[in-house]
Amino acid sequence: MARRYDSSTTTFSPEGRLHQVEYAIEAINNAGTCVGILAKDGIVMASERRITSGLLAPAKVSEKTYQLCKHAACNVAGLTADANILIDQARFRAGRYQYQYQEPIPVEQLVEYVCNYKQFYTQRGGLRPFGVAFLFAGYDEPVQSDPSGNYSGWKATVIGANNQAGKSLLKSEYKTGEEADESIPDLQEALKLAVKVLNKTMDGTTAAAAAEKMELYTM
Image (cartoon, rainbow, N blue to C red; front, side, top):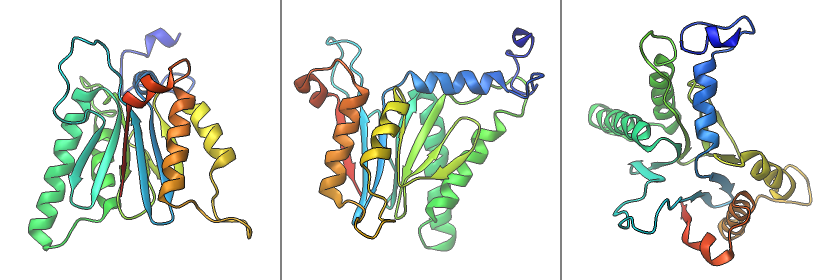
């Protein structure tokens, strides 16, 4: 029954599912892991850089971390080509807002613009969803978005391969600051936790090899 509905992004199956959106999410779950953690004095973003061949020339720029404007950046999990289209849209929107209002665009407004663009591709015939998820970072908590156009803020989250294992580790080790005897981690503690999560999601990778595949940055 499902095969009758999985070729269209605009038709719901009898179970109320949009299969093409689910397939896009599955593509993200096979991509390199990205971690976002809110710290006491900033945000830590970490990602797994997958090296498909030793014959490839080193990349001149990161394929996982992108700056959108002076006060916002993002991590990408999924198809890089799809991400480039959305990143260009985000940069255009941020620049246009800066020119029009002479002040930086609010991060949530930028996220909403990108997610509306993604949602458009789930509601028109002849189009396919973007096979990419983002972790946005600005002056507030990390914001996660998926191919359906949904977005949500998190104190700590993981997208990409083995994200459930990473989220379980964060759930047990990230201090939310809601208890009287705990406080959210500072940047150094958050960096250590991000590396620990990446090591968890990259099972079977030696420590030396894992270090070469990690990208870390703070805001």
